[in-house]
Length: 184
Length: 287
Ligand code: SF4
Image (cartoon, rainbow over all chains, first blue to last red; front, side, top):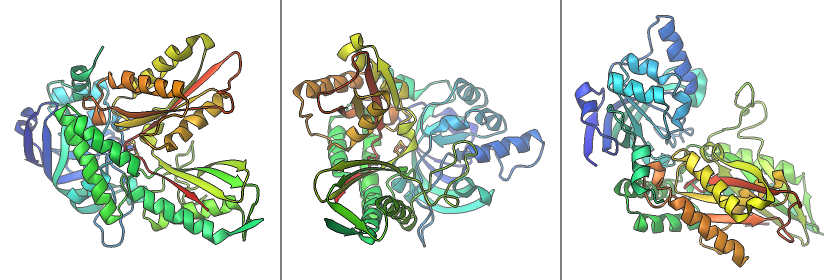
């Protein structure tokens, strides 16, 4: 279990050194998107239109925060369950997406896409929403404001704590971690 | 007949919601500290540390522990000798819920099953809540509240086993639910198990079982033993904190049976499993 500090956008070299189980502190820009925003992004790609942000090296965080109190940058902002984004993730990975942050299992297609195009799936701690909010230094809605908490936001983060769940070698922390501690 | 004012109930519910979504339930906090001490996997230990740090930040800043502030669930026991003045008890619970979620800057998470449109404008902010009423002797109103997130509800299951399946069948069913759930419900978990009654009531009991304080023993010694056995079996799965592999997956198993008599129909054995994530947000007031 190694520990790294990384800055976005991620490059292939960054992704290649990560192994399932490593702890990473991410800094830089991270974009938020949930199911509804993912659907729109993929529709834009299919129509050959421009996306609201550059996918090359980008990291997307699956989150639907609580409303901020007056004066707050963001409300509580922990990860949501990732499988809802599985149908869309491989298309984005193919176009340059390098990192996804969420919680819970991914399907085979996503894991394969991570292998093929060198991308990584990070797990954030579900329910650690007040702690994660502290790592978010600014938040700005850049697309689909009508989606409310599901709008695409550009976040500036500093030392956002995540764990590598699926690396670009096909390893899966959920499976391996469990196998290691399982008793018959 | 004792009289309770409508506004007093609204305020009590509002305050209870804002407090308990920002302050981790003390029994859960204690259980997580214990798990942190006992966890043998390094990654899971790091996760548990984040969970405990999160609770501290949330408490200091009155910031929601988790962004999924859930459906509002209520179990209400109304005394036969108490009357609400100025409105109905149900309306007071609705109003208190809306105020609590709005004024506490909590997330509105109720939507139409089919269109998936948020109900905050059509019905009300995070309305409607789910309420179970019961009528009891006395002149008090007892209200239990939980904020129940989607992640742990999505993996909860109910079934009706054949009577011959017995305890062994129950243990296998619960273990399978926890195993299939893996990382998704945000472990470490408390597992509520409702056994008996009817198909539907087993599910209600499995939810109510989650209100029992972690660390308290089931008063029925046979069930206390079964709880321990299920816990031991589930912890053999090695799921660990947030599913990253480890020894501390299930912090407690709470069984509830239909009373009196641990009743069910002679032909069936209903069993329901309601999973509670580590972000346990529940409270209890008596008015
Ligand atoms: S399962 Fe619990 S801790 Fe995890 S996101 Fe849902 S409410 Fe929060």
